[in-house]
Length: 331
Length: 305
Image 1 (cartoon, rainbow over the protein chains, first blue to last red):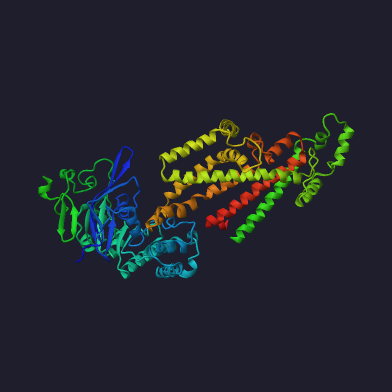
Image 2: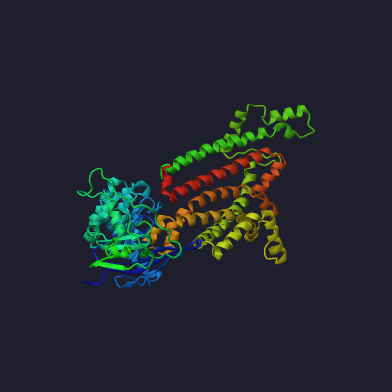
């Protein structure tokens, strides 16, 4: 197999806050091949969005990003300057944000904003850019695309705006698309539509996709790979099959207990919950961040946590070899 | 957009009529105009004669209609003091005031907006601190004091700028700076606050994610949104400046409309005062209208309203 499109090793993000450093993301590793969909799941504040912004080079100036490796198609992103990143952003890697209501500039027409994405990176005329904008608006299922170009964001509904955002991200046919909870702000009825659209277009254009979500139902349907984040760490990664059928980390198992599964969950049965709250990440974080909420926790959870590899491409971090407390570990 | 402009225009005309009525009735608020005109030593018969001569004995609405219909064709009556048509008197004085006002607001905008943007790009940087210092100083210094200091330094000490008069463009440099510097702090702070807010918004992140250059992010995506409140503020200040700054005009001996207003109030020259109030209010109305149109052009969401 060729080298992956994206390879991230030991990505760490530190945010200076009053009275210390917030270790928001610690030691993230993952690979992504062309055409693959990676879903990053985890609860709010686990560092999912920060990770995606770090890949795009869009973290604010005060936030510190370090990584031993962060390569995009052979380009070392850790050393890339602003000019290189600008050339990549919007052209070869594009991003779709969570808030379609506020992510479009209210002062410019849809057409202007769509065309800008192409005009910034390609040496094409306005007519060609306009034609491309119409083509993509049609592709994302917007009717009367031609007349939409002269409309302003406030004239469109949230669902339409998110479709425009998707069209905008696709203008230059990026190789990697990062979608940060693209459907969270939308009505439940159109969440599925938008997601289906995104995934179908991704497959059609053979794009690699990082889909950030906390909706495990979505993950089960679209993911090739799954990465589970907890409090800034990647606690488990693997293929969708591995993570869903053989979850190893106690947190992953807890998450899966929280969603009903057709055929397995009985009618009227209580869904699982994970008690407790996410730990404070200011100051040094040692040991397993999940230990305060984990039903398998032992004293050794305060020490360094080993990386375990139960199968090819399946990794998790836990003191227990199987993710369960066993007789000898309890001693 | 055309619809919006027509609506606003209709509104502006209505406001103008209201203002004209108020400025006309001011004459009756300040006591009996006939008595004021006749002077303190006049007998009752004299006052009554003047009342009839000037038509003050007629019902107020009739007088208003009389005044308004002449005002609409450019006849604002005759000044009691100068014995000249008020319209030509004001027109002459307004030239000076308008030139000064335009220079003043341009100076204010050209210094305040770039400084505000620069301060917002790097909050708490040295530029931000300098901008803050300049705006606090501008707000704290009274115009008359600042004007006198400029005269002392540039006219008396160095002798490079004329201290008073209107004959060349060099006469307008110091008045422009004094008048403009008065308006600058508010515009600067508003630009800075607007830019800071806009720069942290989601659509700026979208623009960056598209690969837009920092220049495009700042001046295409951010400034257009941040400048909207500044336009409204500048319009009000522009109206204020064209209302004539009595202080600046007296210090630099510019015989403008503000100076005329002050003189006419002191002399009880009612037709002139009335006409000036009307003209100054019309300036406010015109600039508010223009700023509404400009804002609607900048922000499409306003066009519906």
